[in-house]
Amino acid sequence: MKKLMALIAAAITFTVLAAAPASASSPTIGCLGFDNGREWTQQCFQAGEMPVAGTSDDWLDVVSFDPESREVCGQAYVMDRGWQQWQCGVGPVLFGQEDRAMEALTISLPGPGKFCMQAYMEEYGWQGWQCGLEGNRVTVGNANGGWGIRAVMFYYSYLW
Image (cartoon, rainbow, N blue to C red):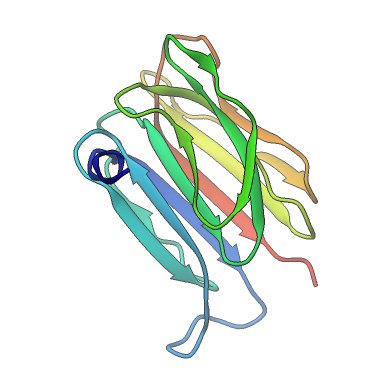
């Protein structure tokens, strides 16, 4: 696991909208980790923050997704390996495979809220937003297309 965590990096953005702007007293509401073969990077964020991590000059191989106290489910399509097994968990959940380009990513966040993603594809640029509500599966990328995902942008808003 330490080797895996030491070998990851690509650009990921996660946005969470809340009723009030972020402040020093705002609680942490989630964390993202990622790798593109250079180093493991993880950032935690508060309501209203939009952290950007990594670079978009290499393909993404692993994403760790941890919405605070919420279940996350998903799977990655890994170059030359195909779709990984669907998995769910509360806490950090890893999608992808070390040293293999991720070509597509499917994520589902059960419970209230709107969740959107878009991918920056090698040779193509940013795809359009794909969105879902309350447990819908959201997929970005191009499975078996031969082009790796360079970056993923996430958008999540709670519904009260």
